[in-house]
Length: 394
Image 1 (cartoon, rainbow, N blue to C red):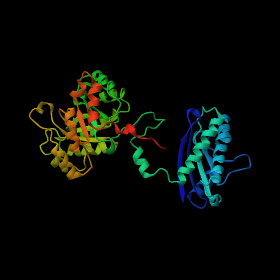
Image 2: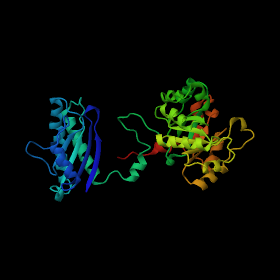
Image 3: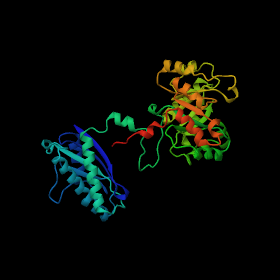
Image 4: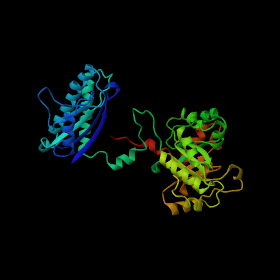
């Protein structure tokens, strides 16, 4: 038996990050403990934690520096406040019942400790590493996190060191408002984006005219003003599906669009490559006579299917909301379904009632004299920005 725990506590250069394993002396952790204590590595010398010289806590704990120790100053931080903090946290965890007292001679702990080379404040190093060790122990012995916690936070979280959010489109936040930037100038597109309200509901589309005008680099240029946004590359791929996915991916696209009119072989390669790279694959059904038949012909389904009415046919062709139910009856919730083509705010209730997950809007927002107001018209019809109401509990 062994348990795994992790915790990040503190800030600035003194921030503490602890990874630990706790388990039986006679098991895998015991073997790793003995191996770590007897096989030294230059710059990462393991040491037994002690509360003070000659007084180790129990369970015995092996501290391993994550960052290469390059000077005696670094040694002082590890052998002083860091390892003392770990030792005291272990001893207090026993006293507080976090670690069962009847296990202190049966278990051992391996604890990886991060100490920044520029850390200066020994009290903060001690304080943060004490808190992180105690928290990591609690988490390990409580099997934290639960699967529900992971599923709840995985698409909401922003890693503090990475500094930007990796957006996804979880079902709990549908419907989304996709804003089609169908203009020929990246500067115009950036101006529109800069006037959009902040919302977890909004996703951006580098439209086909924009990509034809500016090239696929339009995606990374949009990223300059929308670093945390979900950005779709509307390539409308008809050939060389794999190549066009790679091009969009290299420019940081979160999703890429192929035309449902493409040959099945092209779509299969397109879908394979997008899923291999971990970005969303979208198939646009504009002018596809039988979207259901087309979807059934594919080896695997796209992440999103778009029911798209062309601008030039808006006066003669209705949005096929009835297809939404047919697709969901056939495939369940395996795909998100979007609708596009002359959508206005008063269309939204019908779209949502039909089961639409993504509402694509272009001119109504991008050509508006008040872009923010026009965008909020849609968001209010979509039920508001529900994710802003969440309470973060760690």
